[in-house]
Length: 323
Ligand SMILES: [Zn+2]
Ligand SMILES: [Zn+2]
Ligand SMILES: [Zn+2]
Image 1 (cartoon, helix red, strand yellow):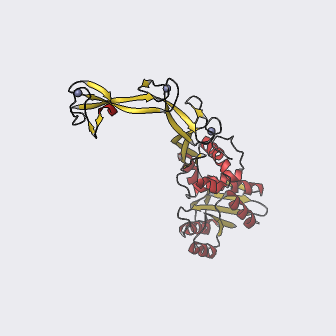
Image 2 (image 1 turned 180 degrees about the horizontal axis):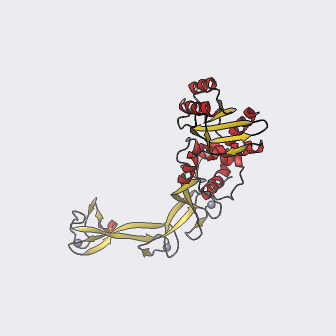
Image 3 (image 1 turned 90 degrees about the vertical axis):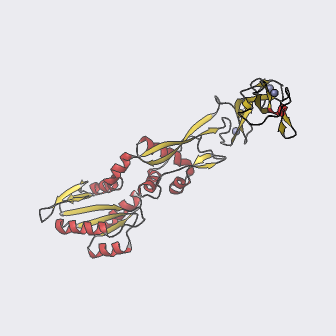
């Protein structure tokens, strides 16, 4: 039995957080929307597929929202049973005197002509509405008669009232609860925040771990980097790393595609820059992958492609290729 929404936040690993984030970064999830399950309430199947463990999703989403990577927008509020945590709650209207839900709801009708007011059922006769006082047939609502609100009667204690009191009934454990006792949780949709999108445009999320890796390998890393070429022109790379003894210059550009494949353009752009700057190695980090034509072109231009859809993949591939 897992009621993930009300359960304690589950610890998660950085890899799991990254997997979810990558789904949003590479565009496979544009807006993370919840799906309703009658037992557990709302959950996020798309995120669960990426993380692999449904119980951890909410903690990760909370953390990413706290870090202002994600923007949460209120989607719904869910009522949970305070006893068993189920979201399988039905709503009852009860008698304010004896709390019974066995109440009868009726409309009040006022016969405008004679001023008589009574329950609708007392006007009903042979599929017609007949005034019990003056015996006239009611013709048109809001002309000769009007609805004058609701009136309830309790079938248990016999009292009448106009406003019933609400109560929640758990269809799982049969516990009733009121507004005060119920656990009510906000449910959100999530999208990348403006801040995250800005960071993304400088490709920080995937470049940052590469920067760390290269620093560990003894490189001096700049990101973004502006290097002057033989022509005297300055070129911008997402990352450049220098090392002395032996003298080595590594440049990395990153390209992402919403369409699923990065096309030739970033390869051509990187080639033009490396032609002028002459690094020892040039990498194109393609998220999630390069198209076949782009791959062929990269090979021709001596650009090493790193295809990755996660930080782990990117760093592992770079680590291997840099040696
Ligand atoms: Zn319950
Ligand atoms: Zn009652
Ligand atoms: Zn009447």
